[in-house]
Image (cartoon, rainbow, N blue to C red; front, side, top):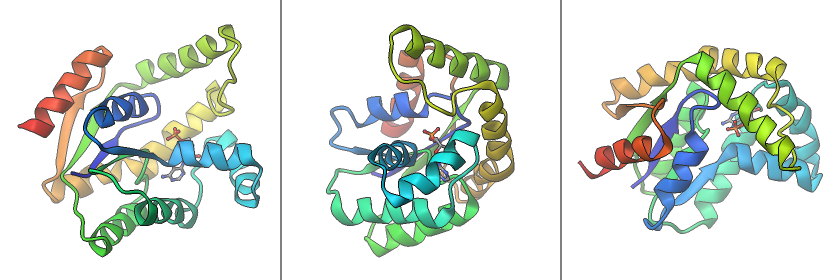
Length: 192
Ligand code: AMP
């Protein structure tokens, strides 16, 4: 079973993806995590994406599609949870093609719905928590980058809601609840 978690920055995609894979033999594929790893490892690609990410812009389709292809080619799993991918219509089309190439399909696209005020306070809170714990703060978890990340979401990613709705795959979940509540709603959709 392959699932996409769709939602704006701070909606809880990463947290829910981690819960979802737990005990199901599924694997979380987060392009954000892959790009941060590339950045930290100082590869050529990492250097290219570091500035783009810090600004809050989207990395090119070519780069993220390449990262996903690599994972689908090498990782064996009882399904994937796509977290933060696709983020553009071109990525969504590429994912369709990749899944068919590997003889797979999409079971559901789960949209986490959270209003902008909550997103901003969650992300600012995430940065403050990391700072207080002496952990590294994401270079894009600041008010300026967040404004751009939200704009990128509305311009380029939110059209995917209509795209997957038209394919009959979209399920919406209220992402405002606490983590367990949201987790329960998602499980009910997947099992129902
Ligand atoms: P995330 O961890 O999903 O919030 O992603 C952090 C940043 O990585 C985003 O703001 C983008 O700069 C970049 N990124 C992650 N996934 C993608 C994607 N699918 N397409 C383009 N850029 C991405």
